[in-house]
Image (cartoon, rainbow, N blue to C red; front, top):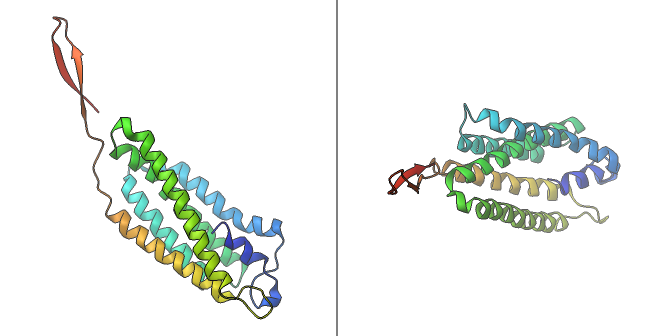
Length: 199
């Protein structure tokens, strides 16, 4: 999304699609996604009182799916781009923030750092693979002029939609377990050692 929506926007209109936008204009059309991502991430914590982290990940992945499908299908007007990317950002912000909460809730405290680090690494690897796949699809669909064909972007976002659908299914399979309690040895006044439960 970050790499290829601006590219789509900057493609000259002579290609039969695109908007011939400048770098600044493309950045402004990406702004709704960044705003909704920031807002969704900020509200994830307060929403936890009503909606579990798992429910937020499922909801966020579902909204990402809708945003990707909308972009693949509707991209003839600038407002359509802004709306679909805003939805994408909303889902992404909600899912990312809730995923961190899920990790903290479901691993022992001493493994929290390793688990969150692994989550970041896997996201980075996934983003790299996704970018490579998208590049292959878009460069594999070119016009005689050398410009990308619209079908390359459509196919790319259809693939993104498929990945988002898989994310929804995987999110539904997330166990609802909480962090397991551990025992801590506590000395008593008589010198004996007792065990207390620590969350």
